[in-house]
Length: 615
Image (cartoon, rainbow, N blue to C red; front, side):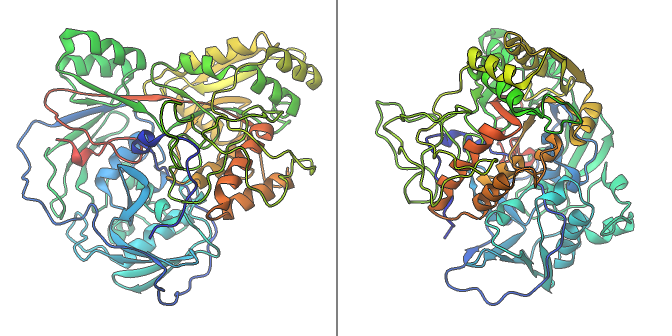
C-alpha cells in the first residue's frame, strides 16, 4: 500500500519519466529511538530493485563509451552533488537505500534495502540486501549507512537541509531505523537521491572521513568513489573527464560497456562530436540544433529524443532591501510579475519548452497542468489519491478568476480562509491556471508607479557558461530585459562564470537572478523549498518570520494529508504567486542524442541517464 498523494490537477504523465531528484536534508538531529513492531497497515517494500541477481549478459569488449555533457559540479562527494552531471556519475558509482521507478518516479522501490514505514509515517525500518557489496569486496552494513547519513547531516550544506531532524538507530548489521519527530511522508523518496549514495565507511575514514567539522575526506571523494554501484571512478581529470570502469564485486546485471568516459563539453562541441562520431551520447543538445539535425540526411545515424525537462526556470527577486531597495518592494515585484508574458518568454526557450503554471513543476503530483482537450473524456485525477481533486488557483497575481474549465472542479476545499501576509483573509481561489499568464502592461506600470521606482538599474544575474538542457540562458535573460523595458524597469544583464554566479546566488547576493531548480524528489513537498526559510528562499533572503501567515500556511501545507493535500498545495501556490519573491517561468525541453554504437539510453528519475543501462 502506498500513501495517498496530491492528485495532479490535469494531465502530464509523460513528464513523470523525467522527474529529477536532487536531495536536500535538514541540519538538526532528532532523538534516536527504536520503534515498535510494524502494524498490518504499515507500508512495506521488498527488495526487487537494482541489486537483483546478476544476469547472464556478459560485458562486451568494446571501445570506451563516450558521453558528453556540461560539467556543473566541483566534487564527486555524494553529499554535495545536487547537479545533473555530478549525479549522473554518482548514480553509476553508488547505491541508495531506496530507488525510484524510472517509469513513475512517484513510486518508491527498494534499493540497497527493503523498507517498512510506520502508519504514523514517523519512522522507517530498513533491512539491507544480503548481497550488497562495496567495490573493495566488503559487505555493506548498517554502520556504513549510519555513517553516510550522519556525515551528510553533520557537514551541513544542501544535502543536510532536507533530511530534517532525523535520528538513526542500528538494530543489527543489516537492520536500522530512521526516526523523525513528526510525520515525514517523503522520507523514502528523499533517501533515493544519489546525494545519499551509501559510502564505504572504513575507506572514507581512512581518507579523513568523520561526522562533523573534522571531516577531510571531501578532497579524496572529489575525484574517487567508495560505493557499491555498478561502476567505480577509475580516473578523473578535474573539469575535463571522468573514466568509469565496472565494479568487480557488483552483483547486478553486468554493464554492457567495460569503460565509460564522461567528458565535459559545451553544447556546440557536443553537436560537432555526435555528428562526427567522436561522442556516442550527448546530453545537452541545443533546442535549435535538435530540430535541424533531424532534417539533415548527413546525420541519419544519430538518434535524437526530446522530452519536457522536470527543471523549473524561475526569476528570483531579492527580498532584502539592503541588497536592493526595489526588489524587496512588493509593488516593484508585482510590476515585474505583471509585465512578463510567460508564453513569449517560453518561446525564446526553444521547441518543446512549456510555460510554468506554478511552483510545483508539471508532472509532479499537485502541479497545475493544462486541462484535458475537450474531445477526450475528462479523466479522474491522476495522482494516487482517489478523493475529490482540488482545483487550482488563478495565475493572476492580484485577483481571482471567476470561471474554470468544465474538466476541473471550481472550488478549493478549505477549512478556513487562507491568510494573506498582512493577516487579512484572502479570497479562496476558484479557477485553475490552465494557460500561462499574459503580460498586462497597464497594470504593471500602475504597480511600478506605486513602488516609487525611478529607473535605477536592476542587475539580472545568471551563469554565462551553464546552459539549461543545452539552452543558452542569455537568450532568456534578454527576453526578460526586453519585456520589462516598456514597463519602465531598466534591467542590466550581469552574466558571470558559473563558479562566481553560483557563489553569489547561494550567498543571497543576486538582486535579480535567472536560475533553474530540479525537484529534489517526486513529491510536491519538494517545492516548499521556495517557502520562507527554505533553501531556495534563503537565496532570495526570504526568511521565516517575515510573514507569520506564510509561515503558518507553509506548515499547514507540509503536514496536510490525503484529501486535504490538493487544496493545501493549491492555496500555497496561489499565495506564493501573489506574495513570494519568485516568478516561475518555464520548463525547458531536454534533447538527447546518441550515435549508431548505442541502441538504448535509459533515462533516470534524476532527469539524466542511467550509464550502467546504456547498451
